[in-house]
Image (tube, rainbow, N blue to C red; front, side, top):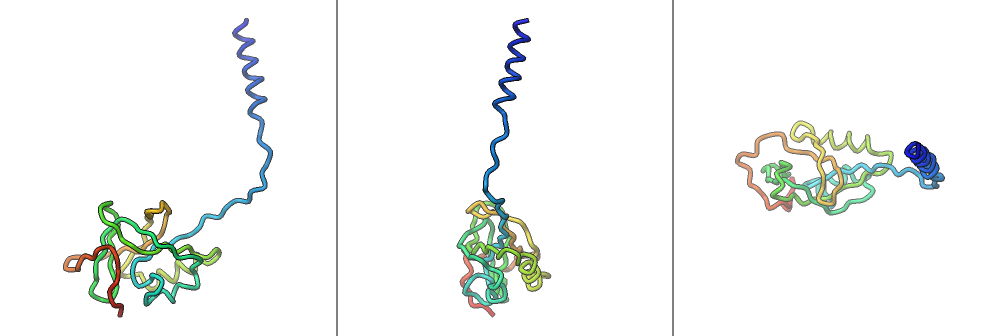
Length: 150
């Protein structure tokens, strides 16, 4: 009988201590949309003006992978592997402009690059465009695009 009373007391006390916390006034935070760029779409480069209106903030960051000179005035990236880094920028897209930005990126990246989801060194999830063809014969770069653009 004592065991039943102890169990009952635990239920009553446990039920009282698990009361819901009062609501807080914190608003839900939106999940930011990020793109990682490493070539002609970086700030200060040839194609950045095509996407600049969508960008709230551009922050230097990097992802794992290998970067190559395509020989056509832009780099080609193969992501992953964990041993080499590709330097670039994490672009935070303005709230409400995410769909437009994705369409614009796809318009000039499709056919040669496919979107992939990556995690940057800073720990954020980004969309980046990976070269879909072979990199055979391409010069491997040191992870940074600094070539003249066409």
